[in-house]
Figure (cartoon, rainbow, N blue to C red):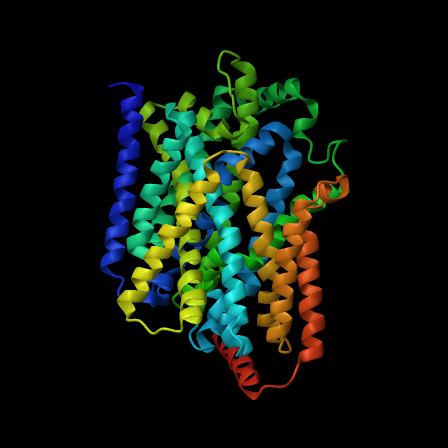
Length: 496
């Protein structure tokens, strides 16, 4: 068989497995709670890898290695910031959100939790949250579809647009029918594939390039500063901006919703260690892939790399048997699809739970809500595909914009809702709007100052300040809110 045939077989097996999982989850989905949150029945391993796989996305195997391939180890500050942010998110947000969302009228989405937690009678928090989610997730989903198009272009020479369409069809299919369970189960499988691939590629690459010493020497031949965490070109603002990616974790709906779905509070700690171990190993693998790639293509000039973001793709195809290379290629799709599916599901919940129910004020049956959720998945995917049709920005650019939007709009509000009794609905609303608008406006400016500072930093700070100040002005004691807060603290202490 030809190399192409082996790779197609491997990808066909992967696609079939994902669709089977979608069908299996479809059989277990009966109402909107099942479709959006899996009935709060995830075990620690599935929850941890689902959160991790939906977090990392195509940027882990495409965007991050591409940035390091071009800029060297100075780009690792993004990964360092993410590890710190993810750990703090698991440590502080996960247990409280799991308990509080259940205590507060069994909330199944982030907007519904904020509305219930703050007793927002105006329902503006739900509407504004839904709009913010739809805006930034459309860009986020688009980044995944761009990654899918790039994947098929670089791997098989397939037209970029056909690759984008094929990726979209498969991921939309299993998300459409299986909902949260399908997304979580496929995330688990995809997370394992990603981990395996990111361990194998750099290890085999180092062997091929002559070991650590020879590999490092080849990298220095390309550019001596590539192996420096703090090269002369680095600035304090640049490093802080890179590390500030970690701030985004507290406000990512598609990640923190996994915390709400863990079966019991006791399993959160187990999930934390599984998730962090997986994440650290994957990030080390991504960094190693980029660095080994620099050495490999230096030593083998007959092999050219046209796109730095395709370094993992190139290494996988050149170093392994075609069938194994097909499995490596599946890892790219796994990273892409796991994130797209999670984001489509949260976008769908925003359309149904936070906009449709409120705007139309119409009661529907459980099956009708599930079908509306599926329609939402389809609509968001179509718009995202349209935005990604002409590849004008890198994957990392699209991800960084959406990441900043969520981190700035929701991050401070989630933290205050979980840890501060005096947060008010008006404070939360003001903070979310200011955080989101700051990111949009900051990104719109094209000056040396704004370009040097990642927009999540001013957005997060302004959101926090506005939410705090407005809450102090509008705060009035509410016995029901105090009772829920106290009950949450009691349950957390009981489980310790």
